[in-house]
Structure formats: C-alpha cells, structure tokens
Length: 229
Image (cartoon, rainbow, N blue to C red; front, side, top):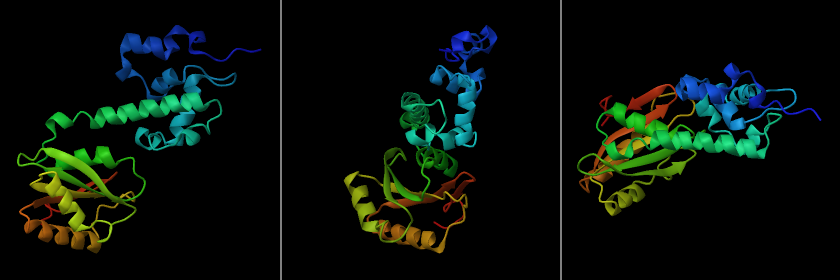
C-alpha cells in the first residue's frame, strides 16, 4: 500500500513545522499553518495542497473560512471529520484570542474603538444581527448582548427589553449596533427611526445612547459621527 504524503517525507526546507521553528509562525503562509494542522495529505496531494483547497473554500479569506461548518470543510477530498474539527477548533481559538485581547481595556469612547470591538463580535454572522453594548460611568463595557437576528424592526429590538436589561446591569449608557452583511453602510429609515425611539425612551431613565454603529466588511458608520444623535 502506498504511504500517505506526510510532512516528514518532505525536503527539510519545505516542512512547515521546521520552518515555524526556524523562522517563526508569523513568517509562514496561511496554507503552511493549515498544513501543520492537517498533518498529512493523501496519496495524490500534500498537506499544503489540501490546505490550499480549504482556503479556496473561504475565498482565501480566513474570516470567511471561519464561518464554514465541519461538513463544508469535509468537502475537500482528504479532509475527514477529525481534520475538519481540528481546523474549526483552531479558527475558533484565533477568533477568541482576537476578541479576548480587549476585555481588560474595553473602554469605548471613539467610534473607531467601538467599531473595532463590534467587528470582532459580529464578523462571522452571515445575516443581520442587532446588538447592544452596555457601559458603566467610565465607558467600560459591562455586557455585549445580541438582541435579535434576521433583521431590524421595532418588534425584535424592543426598547423596553433593552432598557430593562440596562437597568438590571446598572448601565448608565449604551451603544446600539448592527451589521450589514451586504456591505452597505448606509442606514435605513428603519435604522434611524429605531435609534431615535430608543434614545427618547432611554432619556426618561437617564440612560444615554452614545452611538448606533453599523459595521460591515467595508468599514463602519457612526450615527454620532454623522450628527444623528
């Protein structure tokens, strides 16, 4: 039986593990890093070849790759369930590491800081999600809550529920947010109406709506920066 195309059989200069040890992980390509996770290839393809196929599933974009399911990863011939799980786990750790760099310094003041915080938490959603960030007097994040999924209406983003949660969390201010998977950053009339509705309701409770930020792959849009709050 012909042996699998393992990394140990490659020329030393082509082995991603050895390259990682000698030149560092940050100097390896995405396909080489994935090849280390895959460990071995098939009779026909090396681990790097398989890694390149996997990357193509995500359009050579790690963010897109992170949204794929185990079954989708297994569409690449030579990637069984165990390898797919390993890849999915590594991508999830990367996402958690990125979002986890912020908690100790999660003081959100500028729209740029807010958008960075939100993008890490909303980037993997392929549908529209409405979320609220609750803050204390020092503008430090108390909680980040997904309020609804699948679109924004006054029903699914009920101001009463949002403000009830704010009172329970002892929040003094909040940031409204949602994503636009389409890439558009222009707020709709519904976005503007809902923002004003929540702002007015919050005012009666001395809770301030600091901003409503829309995020997408194209960047972000801030209601506060545009003078709409």
